[in-house]
Length: 131
Image (cartoon, rainbow, N blue to C red; front, side):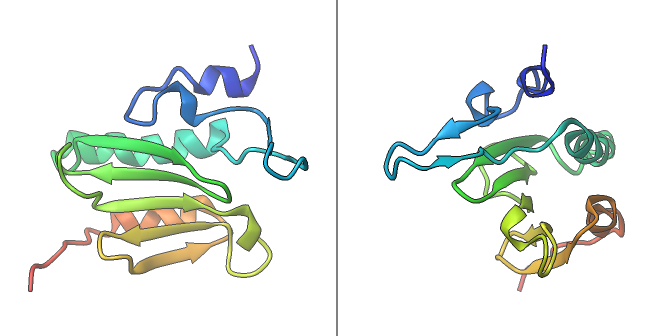
């Protein structure tokens, strides 16, 4: 099995269709590689996710694959909006960094080139405060 095929086994809302090794853009006829989290990236994200689930803060997740990014969304409850979104945008890799953590309101909490540094933002005990 290839690395992409093994990643498909992870559950969540994204389901198996959230991952693929490559696809073709039939609209323009140009070949484009599909963006996905590789095994090391997904392991780092799931390590943080597992800790937060054990603490009772998070309960569900979703993986969404967009045209230019892939998003790991974290939920407190299944029916709510995501608390945080961990986004990978390779297009920004040379500028601000490919990885970012986005809060529920759309505020970018941290952006960078190293996923482990970006994920540390979630371990600092951030609490969402209502207005």
